[in-house]
Amino acid sequence: MVVNHDVRERQWPARQSEEFATMMKFRGVARVGTALLLMAGPACADDTDAAPGVAHSTSFLALTPDTAVVVRPLDNSRANLALKQHFAAALKKRTVRVNETAAPYVLNFETEVDQAILRGRPGEAGDRGMLRYVLTATLDDERTGRRLWQGKASYAGAPADEATTMAAMAAILADQLGQTVRQKAFRIE
Image (cartoon, rainbow, N blue to C red; front, side, top):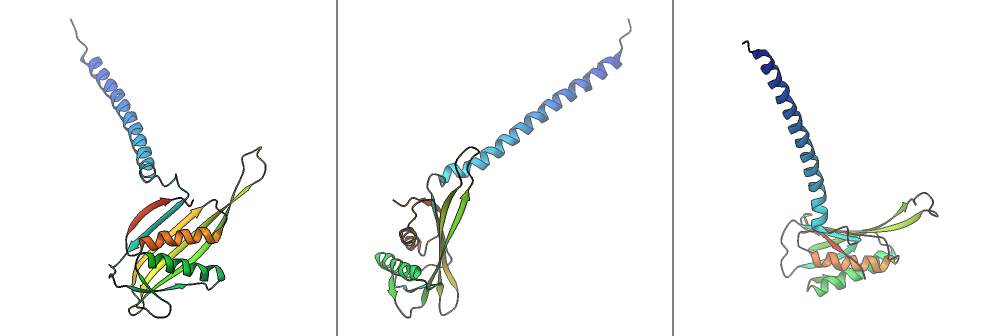
C-alpha cells in the first residue's frame, strides 16, 4: 500500500489559508465596529447633540477672591455695550468686583452671528436659515499681558433675539470665569 503524503501536505496549507482568510475578515469587521463605537461614544457621553448651545472655558492661572475686573467689548457697537452691562451684572452675582475704569484684570469679549443656509430635501419648499450666535471672552492681566482665562459659548437655532441669547451666554461664561470647563451643553428657555 502506497500512501501519497503529497496530497495531505497540499490539503493542509489550503485549509490553513482558508482559516487565515476567515480570521482576517473577522478582524476587519471587529476593527470597523470598534471604530464606529469610538466615534459614537463621546457624542453619547457628552449629550451635546441634545441641546443647541455649547460652552467651554480654560483657566491658565487661578484667580484670587479679591479679583477686580474691567469688562471691555472689542467692538463698541450698541449691542456690545449693552452686553457689557449683562456681563458686569453676572460677574457681580459671583462676587467678582467690577470696575468701570481701571483694574488689574480685563475681561475682553467679542460677539459673532453667523447665518447658515440649510438646504431642503428634494420636494420640500425652499431653503431655511439658521442663526448661530458665538460669544468669546478672555481674561488678561493688564500689567503683564498674560492670559489668565478664556471661554467660548455658541448657540444655534432659535431664539431669533440676539440680545437675549448673548445675555444668557454672558451669564454662562461669567459662571465659568476662572475655571476649566469641558464642553457643557445648554438650552436657553
